[in-house]
Length: 100
Image (cartoon, rainbow, N blue to C red; front, side):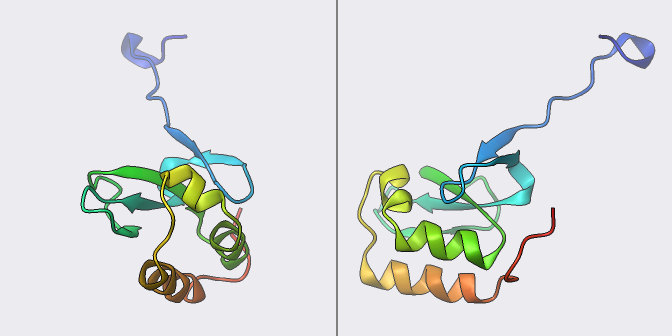
């Protein structure tokens, strides 16, 4: 339906968390990217080039996504030990439970 002045409301892009499989707004999730160079890192801007996967900004989803094979599967690569260590360190700074 058209809103005021005949404009449609903007669609909010949604993405799925690779750990818990719940959909959420793109801006509420953290993007992990496999860069063209093959490194796996946190994409702070959400616009870095490369294949991306998303996780909720809470420690439980972060641990589940990194511990299982879901992150590597989504990024179509295996996580190098140094990349896994960097991502784990980032995840430790997140709250234990998400704010929904």
